[in-house]
Length: 137
Image (cartoon, rainbow, N blue to C red; front, side, top):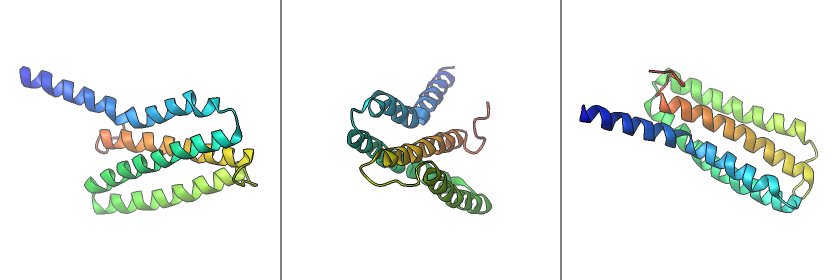
């Protein structure tokens, strides 16, 4: 019984930390970047969050690659490459004249960060379930 309780506690703590990174970044965005008093501050804030999101996203991606079989790895790499191109195209659509220092650049960085946070949450959910993508077992 004691082993079962410890296992449940460990699983719960892992499920909390599995989403902590993406949730923490979203909270910081809401608490800090959305209250920026200038485009320069907003750009800086979003760029810093995006840098952290890239590091965490890469960690989740590498974790996923470690346990997938070859065909699934190939599909993930292909999907990731297509996702990167999609994000670039989508964010260019929303801010076609993006130049550092103007509001359009802020929209572009915000767009990229939004996509990265969504992708991060998906990869974290997949890694948490080790392939079942949020299944209940």
